[in-house]
Length: 402
Figure 1 (cartoon, helix red, strand yellow):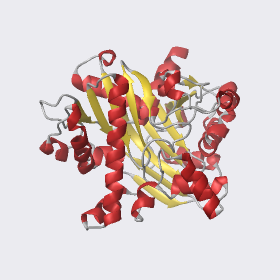
Figure 2 (cartoon, rainbow, N blue to C red):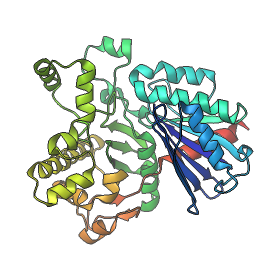
Figure 3 (cartoon, rainbow, N blue to C red):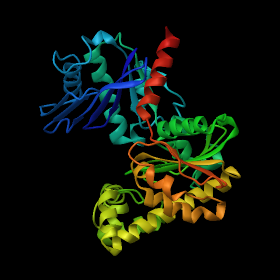
Figure 4 (cartoon, one colour):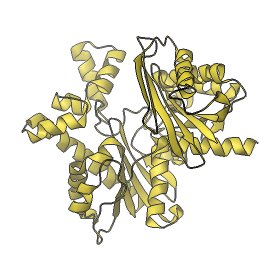
């Protein structure tokens, strides 16, 4: 069975074709700047590649590019579209309406549309992609949607209700939803496998640290709390996002600078975080280079990041009533040993001991334990694989339906 995994935004469309017989990616790529000027990328497992500027006025045009590349006589990996058994879509916001992955029908699409106010750019792009996908691949190809928020649906009320007038939760569903759910789900299960234990017997803290970041507390395979909230802005410092801050900071700046709500949102989401403090970049590699060269603001940005991550981990240790293992994943989590080492130093009070040699070796897709053998909490680096989670859910639901 071959499954096409789609991660669509308002102007982009990432895709992977996965052969589920061996769970290997046989082709992948990205359609960028949809509706603008269009850049199409495609690469096969054996190294064949396409990179070209091409007009893609909408998601349908993007899918036509994907279709043509997959079936191309020279670089294609399938003879025709009948080899694509199903399509799985990543959906950012499922709200309280979707607590698990589901097969797409019109009512599901309408449900995703109804949640657009909670994730305007993301969910709108997802809906456009699903409808375009049906048009290009046909109604007979089953489609499945996998929600970022679904894994976090086990949170208790005390974790997801905000201390604002309750009527706003009732009227507008304002609550903590959490994101990166497919990533946290994948690495938590993988961690249990590496430990040789049943996840139901473990208390885990998973740290998805990238340009966007979140930390999740997982007890017996169930999420009890997570750092992102109503939107991905909540939590701790990220590449360009503030994370949690005093709400009065928002109103104070808005009044002083005469900023509209949308302008203020842009400042908090796109101009803050590592970029805002360092003044250098949203890319931590650039900030790391500057910090090593002695840039004080870059060094401060890293100190804030490491401190805030450590505080969240400490709070989740309390929420869980202890912790058996921690996982670092995503861009920074997988590839920046200096951050892991600094966080480990903060957590020595909890019995965490990072093995320097193991930690420095665990980069560029490597998976394994970085804690010392006598560490009270095991610490792992596990490369995430959200696409594989989507493909597995898609395969399971399609086979059940059959």
